[in-house]
Length: 274
Ligand code: ADP
Image (cartoon, rainbow, N blue to C red; front, side, top):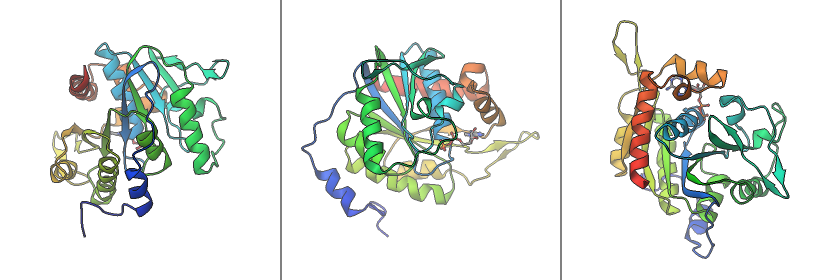
């Protein structure tokens, strides 16, 4: 199989080659960084929230846009239950933990499924990027839905994207999809800042390191595609527990070993731009 182009369909290729579409910046924002994963459940939203909080702790002004229209996580992960206010047709972001936040989940009931076709998703993304009063941001962190679908295309083609970070777990089945994701962003001309290995290993009570999902797969994939490998985040039950409580680990305890990893990743990301 040709690894450089696995599964990228012709339609995507054609769209990727259409160079005439005008790209818009997100108002009020210096840099737009997407957090992407090929598969769901690999910790993308957990990463997006914690890296936003880590960048904030480094003194950056941060916006967090939950662009996962079908499965928004931000209301739960940041424990936000209110609805955004608006002025005219402009929505005000909800400020939580000193971060400007927006999610489709702020506008719908928690258990209402979003049964939308692609064009409606595209239109929601346009609203969130063009009709939200984002203000004075250094970075807007965009939590993408998993996969290589309409949201990724809309962002890549219509918005000035400054970079994307790809999150994966180390299993082969996840890495296959990561390769598709890398190819998509390369084709669409979006800079890949690097790959992160989430749930890379588990340290037992005996102090031993257990590579539950296999070892080194994300780093190998980064090397294969000549992308930067940003680092590993081990499995730690505090991450899930605090996420469920609505105060992510970096906000709750900046001295936690996991928070220190996030802070060092945030320093790397900040240094790329500021
Ligand atoms: P995604 O956005 O990729 O679907 P989530 O961020 O929702 O994934 O994470 C899926 C689950 O895995 C959540 O319960 C989350 O708390 C948990 N999780 C994510 N990263 C870790 C980690 N490093 N260690 C332990 N649990 C994690």
